[in-house]
Length: 98
Image 1 (spheres, rainbow, N blue to C red):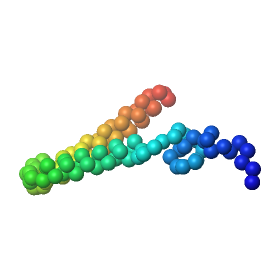
Image 2 (spheres, rainbow, N blue to C red; image 1 turned 120 degrees about the vertical axis):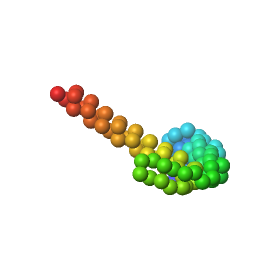
Image 3 (cartoon, one colour; image 1 turned 90 degrees about the vertical axis):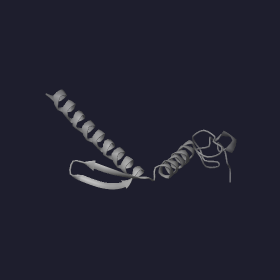
Image 4 (cartoon, rainbow, N blue to C red; image 1 turned 135 degrees about the horizontal axis):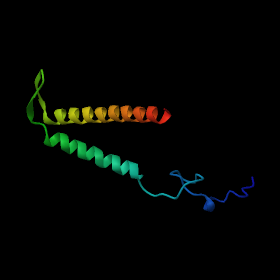
């Protein structure tokens, strides 16, 4: 079978061996390395914040690990940011269409 125009030396590697397109890569991807570092940082964070803390907020009174309280705070902050961003974009779109 003729392989005209299919010279493997002209192919650019997209992550797999001999696949057309992309740049040649060797070793683990950047995403894999970053993901591993984030996972390691998360494990260290949890290991260093296992002490119990008392939380008193409005009508809520409970005791939990410090890392749980911090993660809940971060998640609530991200949700508030997303909600505010959604509201802001809709407000701007309505103002621009008037």
